[in-house]
Image (tube, rainbow, N blue to C red; front, side, top):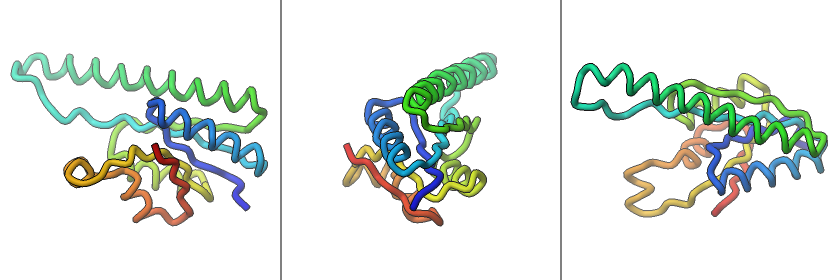
Length: 146
């Protein structure tokens, strides 16, 4: 069946639940897991030009620290369950593309991810990482809904 599962996580409660369910699935299947965080780029700039560099650097530092914390929690859960896990932190970019690229690069045969279930105008305006992954993935995608 599946031997290598990619689980993207942003550290949210829903994402953490998807990680837990993915680890249980991996344990049942005897699969290994790759956990992924993606640092979304800063989409705004402050009005004061001199503050731009400091704000961007602080933002990126915080994202790296958050990623380390989030992935550390996944590593701890996987270790406690005896599941082999690898962690990947992508520095910047579109989350959906990073998920697709990581699955391909690491040879994952399943992507298991949470969906916040946005609908209507919210989904249209914000886009859906899950929808884009479903549309572009070359491997099956298991979606955990809120």
